[in-house]
Every structure is written in C-alpha cells, then in structure tokens.
Length: 554
Image 1 (cartoon, rainbow, N blue to C red):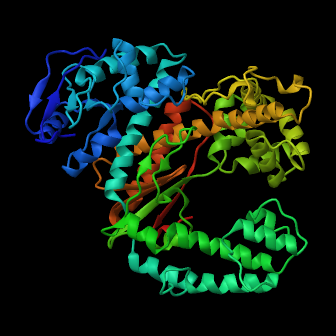
Image 2: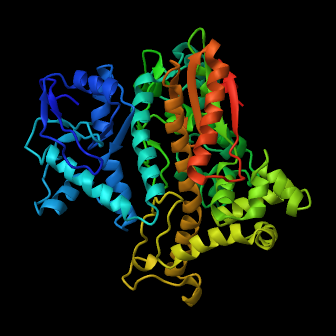
Image 3: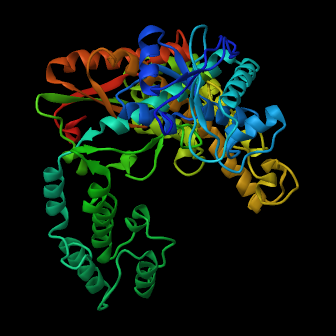
C-alpha cells in the first residue's frame, strides 16, 4: 500500500525470512510491486492484506501469492491455546523485542519470502511504529512456530489458504456481483407493495400488521416486536417461549400464518430492501466486505451487507452482464463427507465415494431409509442425542464406530476443557474456567453430580460445539482451498470470482467460456480434496449450474 507520496520500501528475504540485502526505497510502490510480479512472481508477506491489498487493486495491481502475517498470527496463537488475543502483530513484535505494545496500530508492511524476492512497507501517517523490521522478524518467528506444529505440512496449507482467502475477498469486493437495481425494485414491489410515503413499513407489511392485530382482537400491535407478540399470544391463552418460526408453526391460532408471513417479509424489507441496495450496490455491482476466517470455525463472515444470507427471491436481481453467464458451484453434503474423510472409517468412506452419501448410507445400514440415515449422521455431528435421533444414532454407532468415535472424542475433549483441532490445525477457542463462570477448573460432566447444574449444562454445550468444530472447521478449510486453487485456474481466462458463501461459489464469465469454467471449477474441487486428504475414497462432488440469473441455479 503506498504512503502519502505513493512510495514505499522493498526488502528481499531468503526462504527462512532473513533479509538478503538492505531495504530498497521505491518512489512508485504499485509499479514496483507490478514489476516484481512480472519478473519473480514472489510470495508477498504483509502485515494485513485487508488493509494493504485493496489499494493495490485500485491501482490495477494484483498479486499471485501472499503470506498474511495478521491472519497467520491469529492461527498460531489459537494453536497455542491463546485464541483471540487482540492486536496480534504489535503484541508479537513486543514479545520478540521486549518493547511495550504500541498504543496505536503499527505501520503495515509486506514481505515476500524466498531468495530474490522482496519486502513491501507502507509508512502510514501517525506515530512511528516498529516498521518493516518488525514484520520481517515476526514472519521469521512464524516460520519457526509453524515448523514446530504437530503437522507442519498441513499447517502451511492452512496458512496458504487463509492468506489466499484475504486476496480473494478483496478481489471479489472490487469485482462485485452483477446486480440489477430495476429487477430488485420490481421484486420488492411484488413482495412488499408501495413504499410508505412517510418512511414507515411498506403497504404489504402495514396491511399484515393490521390483520394480525384484528386476529388478536386489538386495535394496534407492533408485529415486529417479539415482546408484544408474546403478550398477545398469552392473552389468547397460548404461552410461548419465543416467537421463532419453528415454535409458531406448532401453534393453532389464526394469527400464526399472518405472523409467519410478516416475519419473512419484514426480514426482506430490513435486510435486503431499498436501504440495503443503496448501501451495498454501486455501479451495478453488489460489493460485500468479506472477512476471511471471521467465524471461529474459519468460515467467512461479512461486515454487513448480508452477503451470506441472500434470500432466493432476492437473488433474482443477480443477473449476469449481457453476453456473460454465472457458473454456480455448490458442494453438497460437504460436512458429512468431511467426517468420512477425516475419521478414517472405511465403511463411511465407501458411502462417501457415491454421489448421494445419505442414500448410500441408507442402503448400507438403515434398510433404505434415507431420512433416518441423514438424521443419524447429522445428529452425530451436531450433538442431537434425544428424541427420534436415539435409535438412528444407535445404528450409526454400531455400523460406523470409527466415524462415530471421532466426533464423540471431540465432544469429550471439549466437555473436559480441552482444545480440539481441525484437519489442518485450526484450534477451537478455549472454554471458560469451569464452564460455569467459576474458577474451579474443567468439569467432567459425567462426574458432576447434578446433570442439570449450570456447570454440567455448560460442559455439554461446549462438547456439542467441539464435536462440530472438528468437522465444520475442516469443511471451511476445504472450501478455502477450493477458492485458492480455483483462483489460480481462472487467472488466464478473464473470468471473475464474484461471490462466495460457505460452500457455494459463483464465477462470472463470457458465455463462450462457461463450459470451460465449469470444468475448471470441478477440477479445483478435486484438487482441493487431494491437497487436504490425499488419496481418499471420499468424493466431494460439486453441483454445477450455468445460468444467467443466480436464482435459477440448482
């Protein structure tokens, strides 16, 4: 990222992170970066790609590879059981030098490792920080700490995928998902009616609110207020714990269908209405601000914009440019397939080698009942241990003991205060002392006496979290690796990565390239599987659609 004059500093490093020569001051930093990309194709290392790379993109400069010091430091701190410590980079610099942690964020820097490669430094305005020396020393220290992990090869892949994700997030934000404002307005008018002339709810919501009040026999009721709805149901003799949709569907009252409809439309109006479009759609593109690894499991998050929860009806406004198409890829049954791959259960892996894992599971052990097979596998991964899941889980435990034992071991570790890791080494956050807010240390829920005590309940809850963490975090790693590989595959095609949510990715490309891009996406999925799991029998098939409108994807 350029300083106030557009210049900066380059510093060549060797593969161990040691400087090969003194720093080189450049007048035009973006031009210098572009020149090094053409000649050396280095792996740039910078303090934070989220703050540096967008400026390079605005200057028309892209880079192939990077090592994001900030993201890597967070991964390493988590691995050491120090998950979530704030301001990782200045803290790391202080630890290495004995200096105090600066009160203000340090200058940002980028350093590509490898002989003949260069370091990039941004001297931002404000109090002087540790500078490029800090970043190079932290980077060298990170290499040593990665080498000391239980499986350095896997952890290096995690760091590479996480760092590539930072590049992809910035590039997708710059490219944007094509968005038709006129189609969006038409959808909103169809669903919500005319907007209120005084700024309140649109006509359809106002009418529904009146009908809900009439159903309760009152003159007025704020249908968007859970507290008022609960009171109204209570007056009608219906005591409810909350107003969630699944609770309301079990209630026999004339207001229920109206409330459910109101909730759905109200969510669209507030989350993806005209105000949303004005804030997030610019120049015909929806431009979310992605946060790679923003969730504890490694899943992506966004800074507003609701990119990860766009209702299908609103997706009708996502229309490819004239002469272009969307290639939409969705990884179906991703988490169950991850369990099959990481657990080493040969019988479950054989089911995962098919196109429909649940159907194969049903044929193998559940008498052909696909719904029971799905219930059992999801129950094992998410900790559903009661009700109708009990007999199905018993079948799963008996026929797939290795897979069942894998998630059970993760749950027991979490319940007793331990840390669990994903396949590549992402580590779950530590639990609170005693799980009940006291300082008595970890609790064994089976020896806690009262199974309904706060500490025992908290232990069980943490066990459910760690049970799924080892699967969901690995699924996030597979998806991030897919993105990184696909980005490289698309580099020479002119196609654009424009959207990503959990296990779905969208590529925007000229119509004549669509079939070829679909092949590249499928190849990237197979390559991601090989990078993570080697020669596994488990398949990770992608459902591919070539469409003009996002809503038409399978």
